[in-house]
Amino acid sequence: MTALELLKFMLPDFLVDHFEVVSTSNTEEVLHLYFEEKIKPPQEFNALELVSKGFMDEITIQDFPLRGRFVYLHIKRRR
Image (cartoon, rainbow, N blue to C red; front, side, top):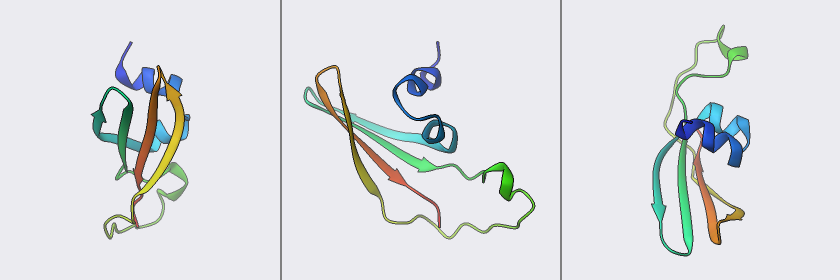
């Protein structure tokens, strides 16, 4: 089983399909997962010419605890 398949068990499919994990931070009490939106736009936007202008401000979402650790998802979307 790959890491991607494991993430799909824990996180919504949309997050795993359209974002990539760029880093993680792990302590005894807290797990931080950092996501950035992939460069490839969703299929419905293939006909449009899109230009990336960097990222919007990062948002942080507290997810359900995992094995006794708090889980925080740090998500950056493209402009």
